[in-house]
Length: 161
Image 1 (cartoon, rainbow, N blue to C red):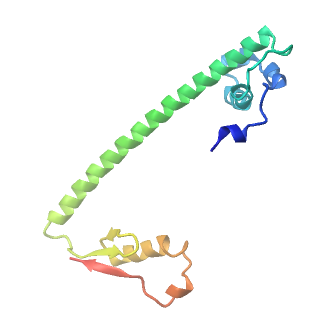
Image 2: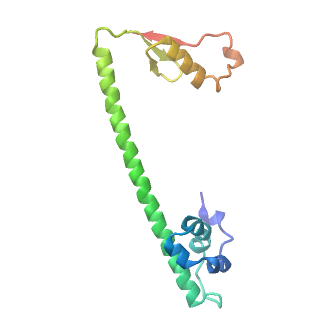
Image 3: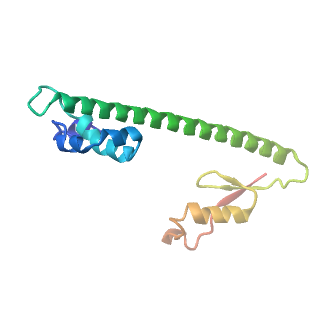
């Protein structure tokens, strides 16, 4: 996505919006997300080529403080997302190990059935034909609706030994 073409009309900061922002409330954390979201395009995409009479020292300092809060918020959000992602990666590793252990246990046991049912469309393997049929109904039949070409045809599956 080309941000320059998307926000071409933004040249000057929205001083009315910036003037309405209460810095003491932002500093206390009241309504921070909404305020920072609304003012983000106006501050980040403003072209600061020349200073005119609207660019007072007070406004510039306020705009700079808002930009600092926006950056701080973005950094905090990024850290939170990285932590969540790391947690999800740990869950995936744990479940993968459990899955490997289950597969070893299942395939090495003497009393386990050696017949497995494989879906021909996505190669998933099921322990029982009923599970395979339910999977095909749910995943491969256009959200439960059987296409005309498949109405008479039984679902395809293969028994693996």
